[in-house]
View 1: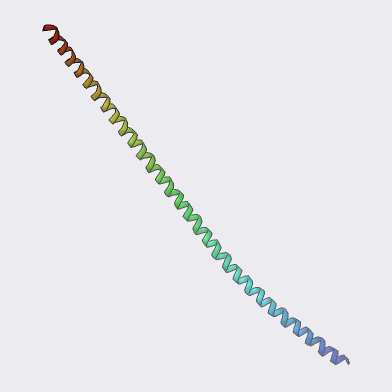
View 2: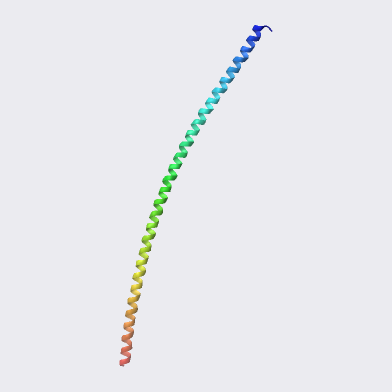
Length: 110
């Protein structure tokens, strides 16, 4: 083989390698762009999920506050009903005692 033939052979091999590298670089760049898009989409989803969880947590806190207020209101209502019941029982007991005393006096007078 002559020098010019060897030179042409190496130039062809070099061109093939450059083309192959260029193709691989194009594929790698396309893969990088695709992965960057996926990463961006995943970051957006993560951000939305975080916001959603924060809103949900805020909703849970509000719900807990409402339930606590309702519990306190019911507790006060229960205490009020209980006090009213106790007052009525005391009134009935006093009335019963008075009637009992009246009956005792009537029996003693007979």
